[in-house]
Image 1 (cartoon, one colour):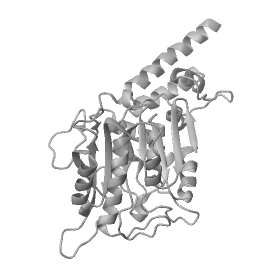
Image 2 (tube, helix red, strand yellow; image 1 turned 135 degrees about the vertical axis):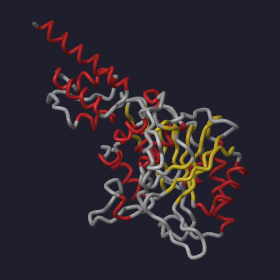
Image 3 (tube, rainbow, N blue to C red; image 1 turned 180 degrees about the horizontal axis):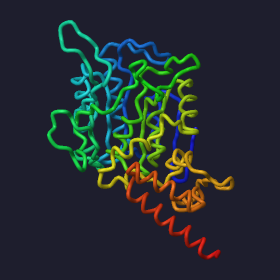
Image 4 (spheres, rainbow, N blue to C red; image 1 turned 120 degrees about the vertical axis):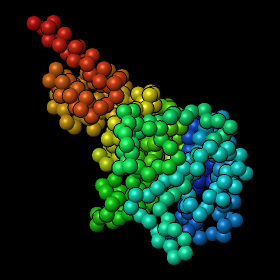
Amino acid sequence: MSNESGKVTIEILEGDCLRYLRKGIKKEVHLTFLDPPFNQGKDYKYFDDEQHPKIYWGWLKRVLRYILKFTVDGGSIYFMQREKNVDWMMKVLKEAGWTFQNLIIWRKLTSAIPCNFRFSKQHQVIIFATKGEKPRIFNRLRIDYPIKPWHKYGRSNGIYVPDVWDDIRELTSGYFAGNEALRDEKGKRIHEQQSPVALLLRIILSSSMPGDVVFDPFAGTGTTPVVAYQLRRNAIGLEIDPFYIDIINKRLKPIRDADDISKYRNYYRFTPNLDEIWPIEGLERFIPILKSVNMSPKAKISEGKSGWEKLKLALPTVDAVEERLKFAKEKNLSSGYINALERLKVYRIKEIQKKT
């Protein structure tokens, strides 16, 4: 399935990861999110999740080599796994030709696995690696990180994202998974290892630019293409299970409220180049915004129009512009977006003056 929006293409492909990679990816890849089955005895329809470690990690090394082959120089990979497998991860990444950059600790907010003879486990690991010594793109994100009780002073411009991520809630903790977790008619989660949009938002923002190609060879429920689509990145999602292919396609059109990334923009507002790496002119950036605006029945959003043209269509009156402008300022949306609204307000006022 191919879902095109202007110059952005989202490809959702059904098939075996290694077989697909052997045939070759038609596009050069800039960023990969690798979240494979963890070989811990899960009951998958199309994968043996209880293999001998040498077989399992040998298979992953072949996958990593193929991805490296189709990745641009300086391209990045984020490889997520269990904390007990760090040695294996480092080994296969190095042997496949990748260069280690960071070991990211994703600290879970609700689930800690108790142990009898070691400390309880409350994190997952993500290794950030690159093709070559340095990444071609690394955007230094700044976040409005909450002040801890023991901090003496507040921060006026946030902090740079460190290698410990303890501000992203996982979706694998039952009740606390919230509305974002996909569920069936009876309320049961469709996939217990669903990645949160906040996690992929940070990864894609950090290591890619609009127009880049993001690859997810184990797409699962499709969080990677869902986030890439909203950030104006091209994406290739590969999934072997046809059930999840259907889930991904439904999740992409339209984007659910729970998957809308705009609610996180204010958290990243201190990032210097935020407007450049998180464009606001895309169609999906306006979908959540327009829900609170009284649109004219004739006002429609056209895929081929520029962000300015879409703004004019979406906000046909001075009152509509002022309502949106007030909201944008209250939510501390980007200065570029607020400036565009200010321009549109002047434009609408001049229209009225011409008619009178």
